[in-house]
Length: 291
Image (tube, rainbow, N blue to C red):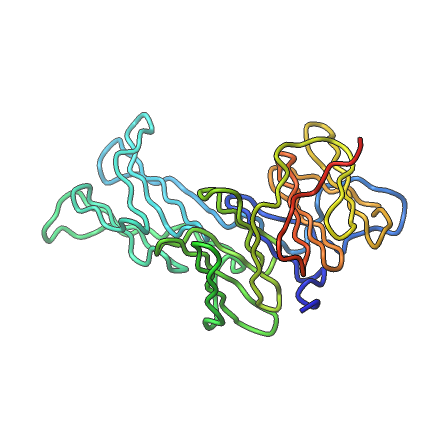
């Protein structure tokens, strides 16, 4: 099971924010500060695409949003931008407003609209296309229950997995092979779901600091992390087998992951820290030690 925690396997999800920091990127040269480096990562904002089109009703517009997390959504808006009607996975058809979505959770949903009912033909518009890494492909590999969530994992090749997170029958999150994360903020406490490149799913709750406090924290198991702040951004540095890494990763609008052996540390954009230590039955938040 240790292989599930290799640095190359880190994949976490936070609702509405991506994790983007390969934990192996510890530099051996002089200390460098930088945002988390990209490794063909697909961050959360790249898995949500939107565009605005004219409505068939004069003066109105329709905002089309295609999300790997929640599927397709169309909002009919008036001249001031106020939403008049919405169709999505909860309600893909609104005959009164002349709106519908075909394939609301598919890779290629289509929006349709018309001004009248009966035999009036529908005008069709394709939703914005998502990058290939934002789309679940392959066969269903496993179905895992974590709390009130269901994680459906798909396999399209060796160490090529993706997953959809479902709650109460609705898709509420997406995990792809690149590090990203999902956080269920609608329950008491916080739940993190982790997908490895081996297709394994782990989750934990209750291991997040209450508020940011700059300085050194100790994680169960012995790892230490240092929380800093520069130009309004929180950053984190982590020890690797007892030695401080030469990299500081900054959470610029999204969370970042650092990993060493069996310990994962997540820095959220608001400066709070979470961790997962493999083999511990109960996860506890990092403990602040000193400035």
